[in-house]
Amino acid sequence: MADETSIKVSEATRNRLAVLAAEQGTTIRGLVEELAEGRPTHAEYEERAARARAELASLLGAAPSPEAESKARALLERLGATQDAAAA
Image (cartoon, rainbow, N blue to C red; front, side, top):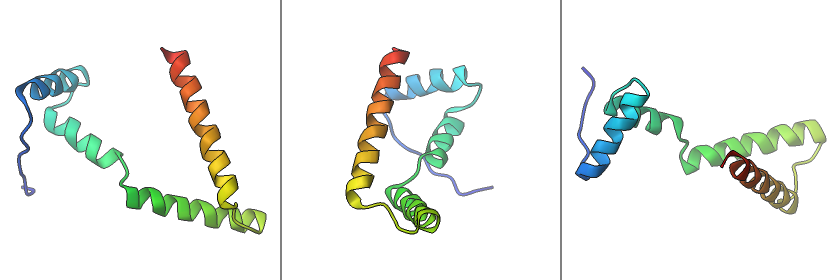
């Protein structure tokens, strides 16, 4: 059996987690594990960014400048905001 621990949350949060888990056909444990496994850490995001820069440098002959990265990030944020607004 794997090492286990418990976490403390408010009763309201536990109840909400129970509803979310039931809706997804899983348990609270499964829901929390899925969240923890599916959400990258800051270090993992940085590692992905470094790999993406290396791939772009390989394909384009140079890595994007910090200004180009900033513009791309802003564009992606605007597109995400547009999609969020359309879904609402």
